[in-house]
Image (tube, rainbow, N blue to C red; front, top):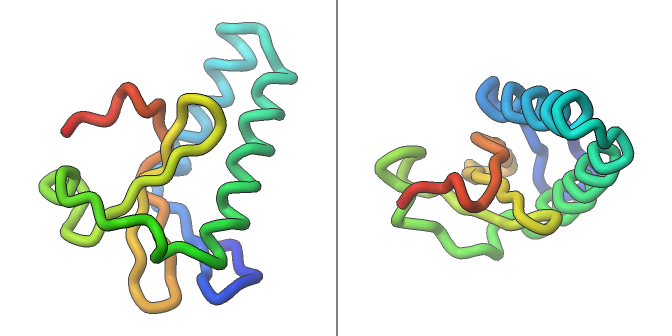
Length: 104
């Protein structure tokens, strides 16, 4: 869990798996460890923002069927997205994936 603002961030297992797969793909398949570091830095910046402003992005009703009624998405980096939900002071990161893979 990450905390430092009004919200506490928790990664669900699916999001943890997404991060592992993303890093593995960038480092091993693309042979670009510096790109992997930049992507993780972009993600950390976005998580810092979510700790303070998680409820600002609108609820994405198009993804409700897959991820639940109050799901939100936020882009990070050049082509990635964080899919998450907010419950009280908790932000649950559900998935981290390329924006192009989000199916509505």
